[in-house]
Length: 337
Image (tube, rainbow, N blue to C red):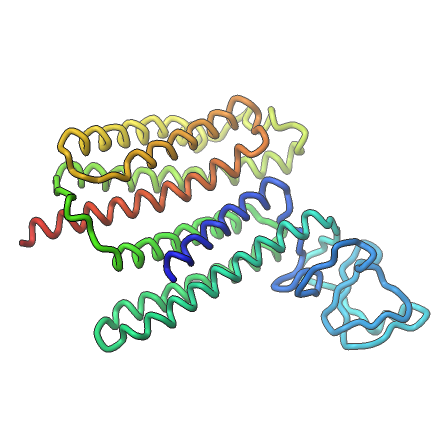
């Protein structure tokens, strides 16, 4: 169940990247429903007030460029009656785009599925209660984390996609990935062919910490780019980085150190025959991150470069974490025996 939840969380991250790429973040302007529906409308006519139509409490219409919510269940008369409606007060965004709505809706569905998978995992963990109470407690802590993430998602909508809220939402997704990676590793048998090497473990620990710092700076760069995009417009992508922030310059240069650290660890694992096979896919992911980063910087953010950069960073985080846990386990087993 932890593996299933982990896959679903990564799908949510991918869906979130697609939402970002297509500008669909406000495709559903309310939460947890979408325009007041559990299954959202497919055309704008469904959101236009219609005489004789039955409306349910909480159902949404767009009227005079404003979202209105039905106060109770009723059937519309021949003339519009304002007493049946109240304005949506969370924000004043009232635009319907079918494509954006369904992209955001699919993102929310995947989020709900990942939450259910994590809940199922926690329920399964109850079988460990007599022997491993810590495992059960951590599994339910993950449930709390996904619940908090859902609340953060709601605040992103209510803030009309405030960059700071988006950054927090992404960071929390990585926290959940880390928690699930730990659960998966804990229930996975360690390869007996792994060998401990203190220097490699220390350098890999530094590499993981440096990568986390790089991801943190990346969230700040993304926030800066969001602000530039809003100020200059989507049609001026070549101008978004014409006056880069200091964080962007550090983030770009720091990537050289990140690459060198990964290459050194890969060389060391091979030279010392430590038996860790995860470095090759990690280097491939690093390459994809570099290519997408260069494309954004020098090719004016071509289609797909931003979501690829974001998703690959999340994938790298999970792969790094799993390899670090392997090294840590091998290191502790060797030096405690």
